[in-house]
Length: 212
Figure 1: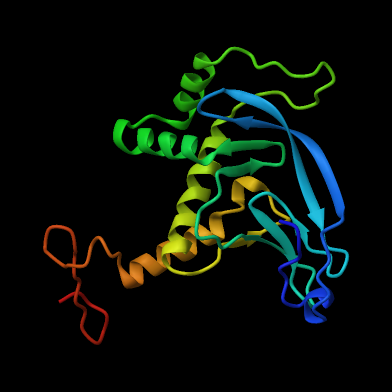
Figure 2: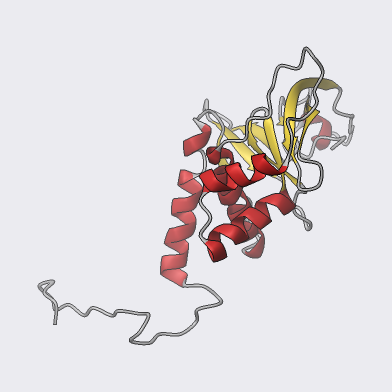
């Protein structure tokens, strides 16, 4: 990400594209499938023209006229290789997919996922003054699960995932999950395009609301 992509940015409107020059970095941990947890530097860039802050897999946008910040995930043909599951913790997307498969097919809980991962890798090396420890938590597993699911669903529906920015990360995806479930309830899914007495229950009511 080198240039602002906000259509309302003054630099974009005037066709005077400028590189994102205001940068900040912080220490983080990346959980990988091949090397275990490793210390990394995470960066964010701010556009001086509109104030949008760009992160690894999303940018933060303030809704005009409101003090409401939204986290907007990039709409890319190829999904992100790394997912941010908390401020200082990132997970490889391929690893999240494997964990999701274990949950779906082997009923492995998030807590046991953490135990299995921790048992596979020794304590990672980090500089003596590193401020973030490799402490994989079950909530990171769930955040990765939900985020990957939502990104895939929005991509298949040609829409963009947006979630509140100024909210506890544990609740950050609730609104998007509810919206997705309501649309599935109303429109169904491509994989389930039929109705039968085994998987669909049709309840008919009369004008007074009583079951027929």
